[in-house]
Amino acid sequence: MQVANVNTPVTVTGRHVSITDSMREYALKKVQGIHLDYPKIIEAKVLLDVNKNYQQFAEIVLYCADHITIEADTTSEDLYASIDQTISKITRRMRKYKTRMLKSHRPKRNPFKEIPEEVYAAEQDEEVEEPEPLIIHQEAYRIRELFTDEAIEDMEATEKPFLVFDNAKTKRTCVIFRRKDGDYGLIDVDSAVHVPAASSNGG
Image (cartoon, rainbow, N blue to C red):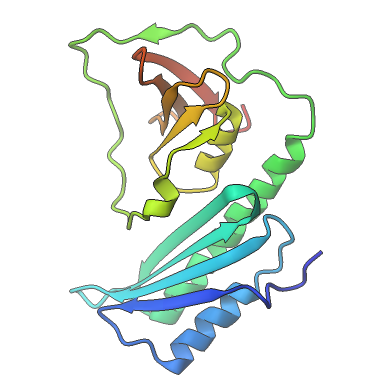
């Protein structure tokens, strides 16, 4: 088990704020001090910002093994507190991802089994929960070939409202998104078929 990510490349950048040596060292120490063995961190990026209301913003993006990307951000009145809270969010998501990885070794079941399909009428509007404002990273939104359970795992590891991917089974482009009831929805872009996806509570 890795004790600390001491060799992890960490990039610390500032927006509307000059990064001091103490800020950089603090962020570096916090990221390298994450005591988790999975997923293994390959690279980390830290973005620090101060908005117009002097709110202190910290965002951390971890690029991990197995093509896993985990990110979190926090806004508070103190920049160091924002870094601490973001690290806490990141470690919780890493633990959750490790738990899902361990469960994946058990016999898998089809998360869409025995769930009837729903086809939207052309004039029907889809109800989509308004996502919170996020800094979008182009790398995190690249379209990859995934199975549906892998797409769900990616959604569990981030706060993103949706994920576009190429279905490894059907070879069709799909969109998985968060529903207001806590479950996930899956849209087959080519056939315009909407299928209620598995619950985020382990279903």
